[in-house]
Image (tube, rainbow, N blue to C red):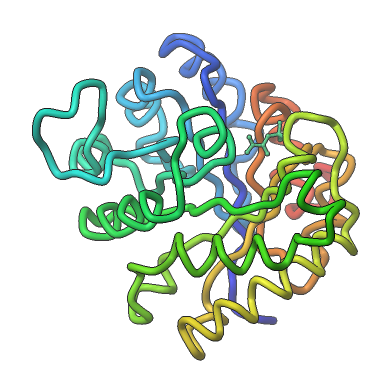
Length: 257
Ligand code: PEP
């Protein structure tokens, strides 16, 4: 036992209105009642955070945001500050997702500022890293991961490391149906754990490392069985209440699988 409680997070991206989010939770929450082995969080779009948070109140499932500003407040049209997310009850926020890096030009320095701003507001950052197919095929996977970890976590002090979740999401596996094998994922996670040890020392052992990329009910168990994989960040399969409940329960009571 390494003491790290696995964490499964649903990243809904730009799917589901507030009403659809509540409808999902009405079907999802009864299906995962009593599951204590894993921590579960739902990251709906900003517009659904308030109603989803109210529906989650009293359940063991946490609320997460998909992004956050690095600023506290000010003239930043369209942005949402960490303290606004904290007020809605967000326990986690995803930063540095590959879609934000690729489509919105976010780099490691900004991701690091966002992570620091979230911690200052009492929200745990889920920091995403991962190589593209081109980078993997060029043999640059570990070089890319090392640079992303060093840059994106530059502002996290070792005493806050235990609050951090680091998500390894190979870009070639996101939304493609092409999951990394458990062995490939574990190799990357072990490398990331070593880099964390360089940054945080012994506290690296407390950081939870999630795998993300086409996780499904059929493949989650083998991935989470790896020694350095402490959870999953789930996109497409988390949009369906039954499928995400099966993913959550794959670590839960035997009879539910
Ligand atoms: C994601 O967007 O974080 C993700 C892992 O997506 P998918 O599960 O659809 O590959």
